[in-house]
Image (cartoon, rainbow, N blue to C red):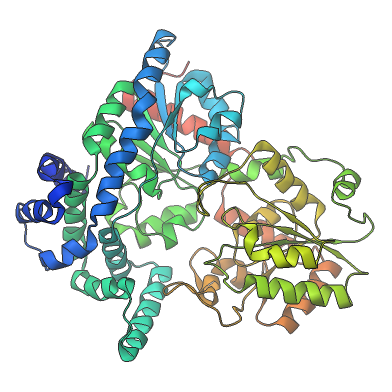
Length: 551
């Protein structure tokens, strides 16, 4: 463990020791007592801290973990009765739909379960229905807490000290947004925090802030309860399937205090270059590629000495192995499509990614109906975090265009769970379409895995939601710019270019095929057998780090 990690774990433990001083009835008073006990000075006043640590989030966290973990003791007793003591026990954190897709709907869970007993920790009760290999007694429910605004201060400070080109873009955009808002006299809360983060714009001050945030986290979250529940499970290893998930943080940090080793997976190709916080105490990270491995040095220099294994990503396996693929005639007949016409697959983004997408899609479909409907047909695949309400009018207006979902909608737009049928639908849509259209999406890479050209939308119609990452900058980002620079995609900057590129991609589908294969390999080292690599990596870790062999 590095000096910096030791500093973080010490701050976390100190915070836990102060948690008994917190009282929801006199929240600000008890928070002030906790802050005054912190042994180091920071350029923060208590007036700053009390704006960044909210009572409502504190109370909700206490209640949520008690409610979520109420059934843990019963399940633990049941599992102990039938446990094969010779097998290691792995706790697998599955905090979101992407993680469920990557680890439960691929071969990873099945392969791990052959030699280890795998306990799944997830906020989704539905997961046991995804795969017959996951019995309900092996599923332990965990809460979905919110972040404190103090975490936003840490994120913004991280942008200031990072060498990631994408983080530099964020910083410039936030500076511009702050200057405009200041001139207009309209500083929102996020921009106020951005201004505050300027006090932590060096590596040393950032690390000091990080330690303080860990201290406050330890004092204001139910880490003691999380430690207690983890100890009952008697795990050999905690496997976090999404290293940037906030839902996972309480468990990986509790594991660090318990000296329980954590292996953490990078679930998406942009996580290291665009995100800001990963598992601090992971003993090993599973990454997609050599490029992603190098991104640790650039974006996360304070964790550059962590052990990493290049394993690819299982999310592509169903595509490359053509799982669930049905004949084109059957697929087209199911959706009322003409087998003799090419198919354009339009995949939407989230509301934050492209706020004006319904307007763009309406313009595109209107143009298609008037000029192209006799030449090709369209299908829309909804983003997992996008819901149909934005497109209700379009669905009725263009009732001959199929709108399909990527996964079941749960409590809110940020929570979704795919099913095996959803993955089968994805495989068939990719393999039976001729061109894929999207905004800087992973669907572009997934299309490459199916050998399909992609047309990307590079204009936002003037409607922007994000202060730090507007659509115009997506194609400049560290993870995506190679696709443009290496001529692997068509990037349209206006409607005229979009329609021209669409026609070109249909007429010459193989024109960029070589570049697509090259970029896909650069971004993801293994798209065919990543499950095997992950299984081998976890087995080796257990065998060598813990002295427990594979059975």
